[in-house]
Structure formats: C-alpha cells, structure tokens
Length: 449
Ligand code: DOR
Ligand code: ZN
Image (cartoon, rainbow, N blue to C red; front, top):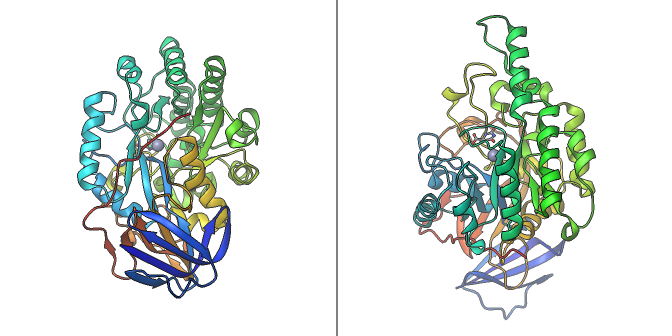
C-alpha cells in the first residue's frame, strides 16, 4: 500500500520544506521538496492543502489508568484521545492497580495494549520497596526506563528509604536504563499541610490555591537535588519528570547537547500554560503534582525549553472524574487530562519545530525508541497533519476521554489536528471523527546505549 501526501509543509531535519511524502506500507519511503514526480505511483493521493506534516508525537509520560482504575479511563479510550491529538506513541506510568512493579503486571499491560491500543505503546516499570529483583531482571529492549516516585502522588508509590534509593540508582545505571523520577519531598509537604490546615482553621476546607504552597518549590528542590546527587554518584541517566520551578532549572540543569547530558528534564503543557495565578478561574482542574508555581516560574520553564536546559515535553495526561476533583486542596484528586489538546495548546506559544524536537525527536533519543520520532526515510510512518485555523474555543464536550473535562475549557486555540497516521495507517481523521479500526499499533522497541 502506497500513500502520497502532497502540498504539505513537511518537517524534516528540523526545518519545514514545502513538499510531499510517500508512505509505503508501514514506513516512510521518500519525501521531497516541491511537487512529486508525475510518474510516482500511489494507491492513494492526498493533498495536505498546505498543512504542516509533523512526526507523530511520542508522549513519554501518561497515566492511562488500566488496569484497576478503569472508572477513570482505559488504554483504549486514552489512546483514542492520543491519536486525535497527534500522539502516535505513549509510555504509560506504573501507578495503576496493580502497580507495574512485577513481571506479571507488566505483561498484563502489554497484553491489554496489544488488543486495544490505537497508538504505539510502552510501559514504565515502577519501583516499590521490594521489587529490585524484578527490576534487575528487566529486558532493556522492552521498556523505556524505570519510574521512581520520590514523594507521594496518586497511587502511593513513594520510596523514601535512602538505602533503597541508592540501590535503585545503582541498578538503573548498571542496566543502562534511564530513571524517570517524580521529585517532591514528603516531609516538607507534610509540614506545609500542617501550616495550611492552621491557616484554614480547624475543620475548614483548605482552599485549592494552597496546593502550590503545600507542594512548594522547596519540596521540589529538595527531592530533585537528592535525585541529581544520587545520579552523579552512581552514573545514572536521570530524567526529572515535570519540572516546575526556576530554582530547579538554575541549580540542576544545563544546556549541553543532549548526547552529553546525564541529567535531563521534562516539562508538561499544563505547567507551561498555567500558573498559581489561575486557581481562581480554573480551580481544582489545574491541581496537579507537582503543583503549578508562580508566573515567573512558568516564564523560566519557557526560557529553559528554548535554551535547551529542558529536554522533553510529556503531557502527564492523568484523567480523574470531575467528581474526584472536589473537596479542596487536601482532598481533590491531583492530575488532569491533556493528551488530546497538548499539540494545539503548545503551538499557541511555541514554534512547531521546537514542539516536534521536544515531543518526538528528544523523547525517542532519550528513551531509545527505535525508528520513530523524526520524519526520515526508513522510519515508521507515524505522522500528524496539523492545520492553522480560525480560533475555536475548547469545551468539555470536545473531550474524547470518558472523564469529559479539560483544564483548557474556555481557551481559544488556533491549530487543529486533521489526520494522524500510526505505522502508515490512518488512525484519526478529523472530518469523519474516525479513530482507527483495525488497530495498527505496535509495542515500542527500545535500544539503550
Ligand atoms: O498530578 C498528578 N497526577 N501527579 C502524579 O504524579 C500522578 C498523577 C496521577 O496519576 O493522577
Ligand atoms: Zn505523572
């Protein structure tokens, strides 16, 4: 099967060319500038009408909730939202039920995804207090890395025992696997909770805005500094998940070329879009861990993304029911769905070249994803066609995830995903609203060097 896409702005080698691209079966077989050769044979020819053709996004930070939390979401539902958002591959986090802390749990997720996922899939095994044997026996070509929670969040997977942390950093280094770390300090958070309770008064609900004072910059700095120290000591490839503060950027990150870095960092579209100033309008919808910080911190995140101090964008897509987002800062669930509108919202403030670098090329490189992440002859044809459009306002009813809400409700956006291909097959078409059947997704393959 050959599909020719012409009249596209094709993003290859970091820049746009006005041209065409040929998909042959599952892979990209050719692309070029200008009009394609008139003799070029294809089963299907499609004009992109001047829209941008980008590499499919690789989201290395999602919480798809299956197994065990399927009242919130499933791999089927969230991977459908993913392809509607131009995300063609995802790596899911281990805080499901059971947590992905054993060979059986990992195999169960792979099995569910092989039957139901619209996008290519990989799963992070997680660290528990007692699963180092499982982690030591992992096949590195089957996983993107290992996920460690230093600090509690949804799923209570926090590991704080110093000896276990030392062993995990050493083990990840020995296996050559990246260690992705959620870095917040539980002791600092607990102290801040007491202060917030005292401020609110006995028995009163603690207001949502307190979340950013509870999950403070200090709590992030303490845990991410500890992670960096352990990574240096053991030679571990550390990826700091969802970095939120200028203080962490200044003390822990540098702008060396990616291949020379031992410590890398991720930012989320939510932290790039919102700050603690937005609690009055968005409330618990922007309550996430780590919390959004000040607007100055948000500006520092943008600057660091552009300067090369921040390496990847991951959505941290974490759906909860709206009914679970009630009850103030100490009760409302933390996390928000983001995957469907991540690309359009990022394009509001960032050039497409940078978004593709941080959300396709760099994740593929850092997590060793084979044959994806760039428009390149021979790579899998994971592609997204995105067009500029008249401004439209996002509403909860647009959300494909069954949680049916988005922190972006009411925002005006100027780009939309038109079509998405996964392994050369059309996986999403905006006009028909159709998401792929049959499924063409594959397990991601990894090579860690
Ligand atoms: O806000 C968050 N939600 N942060 C996390 O670390 C976990 C996530 C979730 O799974 O709900
Ligand atoms: Zn997360």
